[in-house]
Every structure is written in C-alpha cells, then in structure tokens.
Image (cartoon, rainbow, N blue to C red; front, side, top):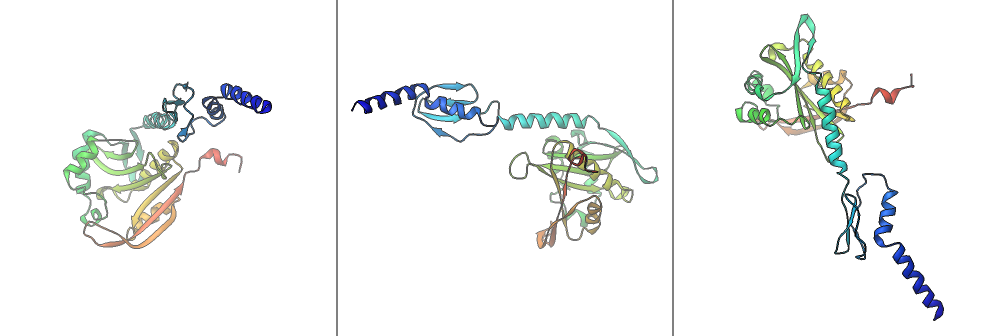
Amino acid sequence: MRRGGWSGKLAAVLKSLFSVAQIVNLLYRRLPIGRTLAELTGSGQGGILQDGILRLQQTGRLRYKPCRGAKQTRREAGTTMLDSILEQFPKEISLKDGFKAALRPLEPSDEKAFHDFFLAVPEQERMFIKHRVTEPETIRDWCQNIDLGRNLPLLAVVGDQIAGDATLHQQLGGWKRHIGRVSVLVHPQFRGRGLAKALVVEIIELARNIGLEKLEAEFIGEQETAITMFGLLGFGPLARLPAYVRDMKAVSHDYVLLGLGLETDEEYAGME
C-alpha cells in the first residue's frame, strides 16, 4: 500500500510538471517550422502555449494554428518574386528579317486588341482552343480580372496590334502546384519569323525564375508543327491518348501531352 501511495504521488508530480500542453509544445519545437499538425485531443489542462502556434481550447481540444501560415507566406513570397521578375517588361525582341516586337503582360486596356487577335485566327484553328474566344464576354473577363499569379499572358505587341500570346498557367495548390502549363498562339500575319519559339522561351525562363519545377504543354494530334517546335525546345512526350478530346464542333482528336523539367543552372554546378 505504501509503495502504491508513493507511485501515485510521483505520478501526480510528473503530471503537474509535464502537462499535456507542455509535452506537445516540446514535441512541436523539435518539428520543422511550418509543418501542419493534425488536431490532437487533450485532457483539458493547460492554456495558450504560444500565440499563433498551438492553442488548447477550453473543451480540451488542441488545435494547430500556423504562425502567419506557411501557405500565406509562400503566396506572398511568390507574388513578390513575380513582381520583381515582371519589372523587366516591356522589353523588345528582334527576330528574322529585322522583325521587332515588344513583350509585356496582358493589361485591362488590351481588351479590344486581344479580341481582334483571336478573331484573326482561322476558324479551323479556333476549334482547338478550349475557350470561346470569339465572344467578347470571354475576353472581357480575362482582361478585367487579371491574376498573373494564376494565368500570365505574355503578349508580343507590334504598334497597337497583338502579334502573339504565350500564357503561363499555374495552380496555386494541390498536386500540381509545382507544375506550370504553357500555351502559345501567333497572329497569322506574323508567322514564320520565330515568334512562337521566342515567346515560349520567355515563358520557360519566367517559370524557372518563379520556382516552378516542370512545364507541360497540351496539343491535339493534328498540331504537328507546334509539337515539333516544342520538342526542339526540350519538351518530351508524356502521353498520347487516341480520340480523347473533342473540339468546339464535337469532333474527336488525339490528346498529346508534352513535359519539360526546369532544372536550374545551380543544380548542374560543378558537373562539367
């Protein structure tokens, strides 16, 4: 009985020294900062451990509340990086036959010129575009709700006319948050000068600089010229699915997916 009494007293002392809250806090301090802890249930003892880290509710339920949140911090860092990168625009490029164009992101004032750009694309090619780009409402929505962190249309402008567009599409969360997607289209009047290639090269560099690890490009099987051009830029085949997608006229086509790894120069440092 006496031994049992001492055991009970020892347990009480340990319980007072290391409450549930204190033990969890010690464990948390040994975990990498920013790791999300699942909800833990406690005995109802303790209070606020640290503001913005772990809180023990009056109900005895312990919840993790991130310090400003890793997700929020990552988004802010990405936005700051993108803003810094976009400071290089507008910039001029020179291509074949002395052709010059100014590169810059889409702006709200581009609404009419952007719509005219898509109207100039042959109808047969527009069938392969996912959106109804001939409808003014579609273009208006794109131009008046610009979110360059999700969709970054990089325009090639000649005078007041849009000669080409390459867009970097991103997902800010989920399984593919480290993967971007690129699409490109050139006005028929300005083809044959290497503009599509120049625009894709710019998008590749943008994607690499903002921290993306991979790029994808989607095609239908008949877009052989575009597939070849992307292949010359390092994109390799990821998938080809027969009769998998349908155009705006409900005609089936093969779906082709190409991919590119965005290894940085630092990853190859010392390998030469």
